[in-house]
Length: 90
Image (cartoon, rainbow, N blue to C red; front, side, top):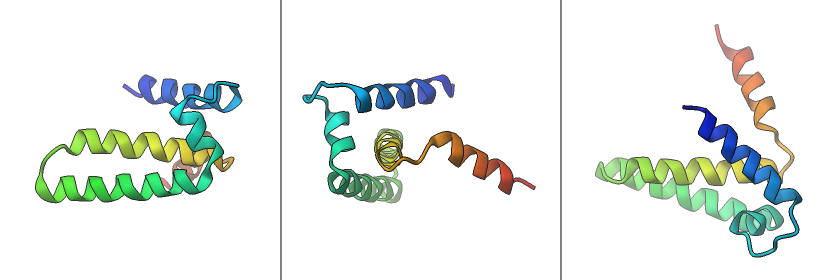
């Protein structure tokens, strides 16, 4: 189940190092302002979907994708986030 998330993270990292400028992911990685705007937009869409009880899974996927790109663009490794969450477990 989490293999898909691991594959997504690997793809984002590959795009970060890629010279392919036509990639949407690369565009987000290069433009932090755009990436932040997209996270805000996708979170708002998810909240709206939850309130309307529709399209929640689709919007959740959008949030996860854009959040993973934003983290990577800002040098925040998901591994470090996972370590922090592990520390918080009681």
